[in-house]
Length: 335
Ligand SMILES: O=P(O)(O)OC[C@H]1O[C@](O)(COP(=O)(O)O)[C@@H](O)[C@@H]1O
Ligand SMILES: [Mg+2]
Ligand SMILES: [Mg+2]
Image (cartoon, rainbow, N blue to C red; front, side, top):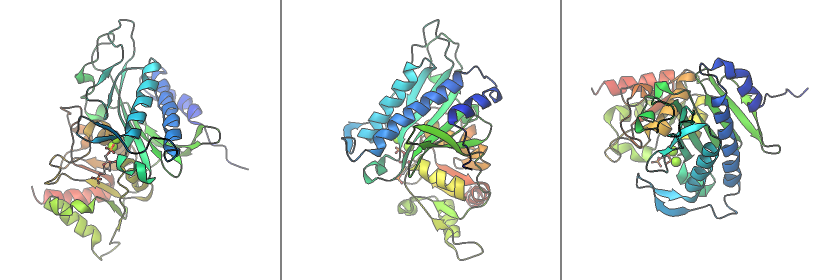
């Protein structure tokens, strides 16, 4: 008899009470993200047929050429989150500054701010390789009914109340945590419903996959170079396999299922690293730790880093516990 998978809607309701602030608002927020994900998924799937390939002609605050799908996904998520009266502020990779959602309306009781990377893996959009969306959710720290401020967004990752991603790949999945483990839901495109397909996702403590853009190797810190060499040595269960999709969400997703480590080090080319702390590293680090993995930004636990800017970048290493610990040994050698 075909096992009946729980729908995302059923799962959210069943687990609502688990959430310390459970007032249904966070459930509404996850549901809104689910809705926007379906709209964006629809656009991604027919990307070659409609005019959403290629550059949009503008650059974002980080000087990156915005792809048409970056802009479209950004609009869809902001629209969906703003229209549902559930958030009081949004920050996005594609917006220079944070957006306040009528938060200075005294009647405005909304407590959550959302930080989002609307389209992750932009360099893969035009070549039909899997891409994603990443989200991070906090309770605001400033008083309700007053305008949200930068302070509401610059919270350390350990204070996230929820985080997750959507991967638009061979199937479309929504994977998230509210601090009670990580669960994955697969979209059945025929009926437009997400079903619980990957309950309690966990990183294997050891893995055999390393993911890094080796094209930057000569610019890496010696500790990182030594660890990559260690991965490639003929010894014990090594050499490991090199797999790099170039979409953080997709590389992370694979490594969480199979066991592996993702690395985007700082280098003489990207002095701070490339990935953004607030809407890439913090949410992925929260998921990693909830799935028994580790995430470090050089020598610091990512979730303990105190953010200082909306679009700040950090070096990022994340994955199976023993692999990240081994990398740390190599990094420590040069301190
Ligand atoms: O092409 P590079 O330098 O290896 O960078 C790839 C990394 O950059 C990213 O594309 C950055 O994310 P965006 O596409 O959201 O800007 C990651 O998804 C990916 O892991
Ligand atoms: Mg990204
Ligand atoms: Mg992006």
